[in-house]
View 1 (cartoon, rainbow, N blue to C red):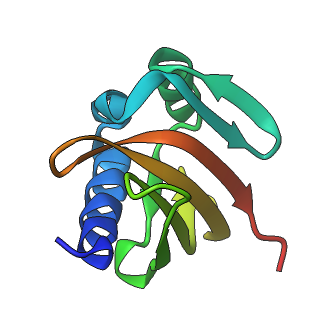
View 2 (view 1 turned 180 degrees about the vertical axis):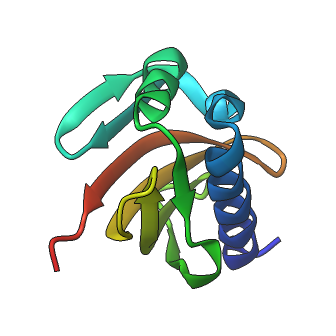
Length: 122
């Protein structure tokens, strides 16, 4: 698979799962995984997933998500940038940007080593 195909598969799985069952994303994280949302840092699958659950019902506008991907510093890492819109509960849509560092954990398998999320003010 090309890195673009890997990125497309990851984005589809990540946001599709996030919207219906955030707990289902736990396997994408390792104990050393670090995620930051709006400046708040969490480490490890349990802490990260608990943060997701605290948001309430989130819906991403998956068809309108944009993504860019590059190889990381080593051949087994990818840097993925995603931007788009989400809704939390029944609030108006919000623009967001998110960056992932994905690290290969086996043939065709990646985990999220780093993740940074920000709402866009524009």
